[in-house]
Image (cartoon, rainbow, N blue to C red; front, side, top):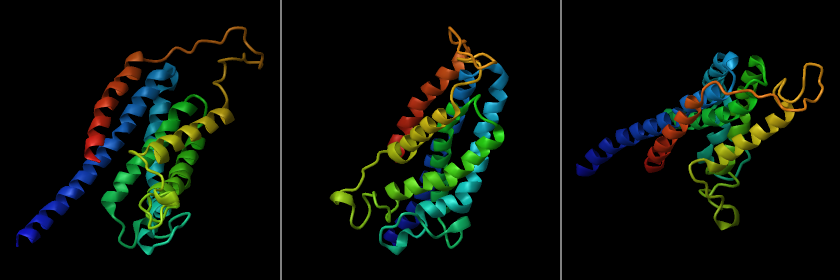
Length: 236
């Protein structure tokens, strides 16, 4: 009787904890929005705030439809695979709490790149990027690191080199992937128009200053992030 009561009590608590952890990770969206808004010019603030909203909207569609399936679908089938192949559109008994937690990481990855492309990209292009990143690019990396079928996973039945890749709180699948994606985007898009060249394409003698919209918005997310990271660290 005691065992049954304990298990019936523990499961809801674990599910609630999973939702709390997902909410903490998802709260990074607010921090990224404030940081991006504070770092750009006033005329583009509303635009970049809408981009951060699109990270959640477009990212949710991509991760709900195929992203989660590519990342974790078929984990119980055994063997190492390059990508998942089950639970598309969250069908066949997908874990909703786990989906929300992983979706928060996918949105965080997408928002990492938002600051790189701020004032450099059109809205339609950014939405397509968000869908592709959360629907395919991130799931492939997450499957390799975190899925029990991933070829880099330390939880695989036969991990790579006997240990697999040991990741801490998404430093590899989330932050490394976001950083590399941001670097590629910066190289493709180049600097903001008017920063180093005039309207005719001639190189300026002195780069033009683009003052930030609000230094307070730049600093405030950093302070909140420290407290949030501590909470995430102790909740994982």
